[in-house]
Amino acid sequence: MLQIFICFGGREGENIGSRLRDFLRVEGIGAFLASPKSPDVPAGTDYKQFIEEKLLSSHLMIPICDSAIHKSQPARSEIVKAVQNNIPIIAFVRNNCRAPKEIRNRWVPYRFDPAYPESAFPQLLLGIYRRIDWEREQSEDLSLRYPTGLPLFREYQKFLQRR
Image (cartoon, rainbow, N blue to C red; front, side, top):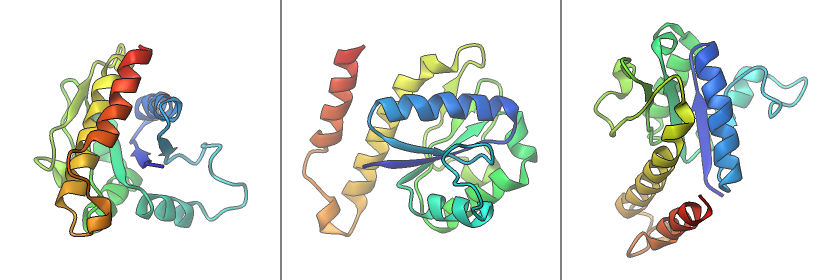
C-alpha cells in the first residue's frame, strides 16, 4: 500500500492535513498525519522517534504549506529529513503562500483555497499518482518499474468513476 506522510505547521494546516489524511484513506492510500494528537501514535511511544520512522518508511511527503509552516521547527525538520533521504515531496500550498525554500522548485506544487481545501484533493490525488509513477520510472530498481504507469492511473480512473 502506498504510504504518505503529511506534515503541517499550525492549526489550519493540521485541520486540512487531517481531512486530507481521511480522504486518502478512503481512496485506499495509507496516510499518516505528523501530529502529537494523532490517534495513529500509540500511547507511551517516543513521539520523535515514531515520527522519524513513519517519515522514513513513507513513499511520499505532503507538507501543508500555509504561513505557519515557515515558523514550525518540527515541520521544517521533517521536510529537511525528507529531502536528505530522497523522499519525494509534493507541496500542498495555500493560495497566496509559498512553500518553504527547501522544497521550492522540486516538483509542481498543488494549490488550495483555504475556504474549501477539499476541492483541490482530487487534483492532488492525481498528482500523487503521477509522481509515484514518475519515481518508479526513474528508479534503477527494475522491480519497481512497469512500462506504462497504468496500474496507478487505473486507480485514479476508478476514483473518478466513484465521484
